[in-house]
Length: 279
Image: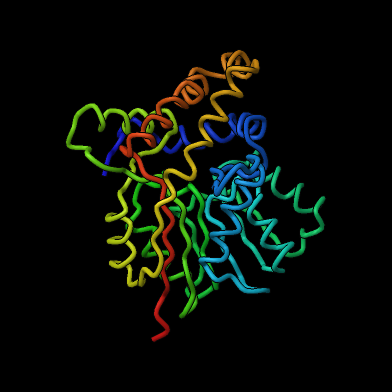
């Protein structure tokens, strides 16, 4: 695991309060990577990641879903519209909560979605509430990842599943240069730590969950940052970021860093699905 002790909870909240507009301008309604199989457009690739995770999680019509790190509500609204799921979305950002709630009303699923401004690490949920816990690119921002998975195991109904997409610490990090590359990603993208595939499997199993799917999508998602980097270069977004704060500028300037980390596999991008036993 690579840790970045300079990251604070307040910095993560501020990043999304100030940076949500930049995510939307540079990428769209899904604040997560695209998953490419060929020459798809970025919008199609982003939707493919959501759809693929949905299939692996075996989400069924009408199930109850907790979306941890729901962002602007893209995945939550999709699950509510396409599968009639009852979705609770959690975000640290009031901007994102308002954006998601407004979009849900506009898309006609306000009655099947609920969005909360809440810290996922202090979230109070009754045991056995949800059929599925879903989190795309949020666990990077958690300070106590093992405790999060212990909570997930409590929140799930017996037989329920947790589906995670996460940025992961990759290969060869005993090399100081490669470790610094991942540290720089953590600093620029306000991640207190990045765990490896092995870390995530261990945390899930320690929580009593049974890992049933583990996929490495690093090479299929890396194009996300080529596109975002090129869009920054063609636009005046960096100039706008300078009017916001230096941390937002650092975030934009680290796009090349995360791309290099993926290309060298110093970072990985992974999908994991685990089940809570019925007994």
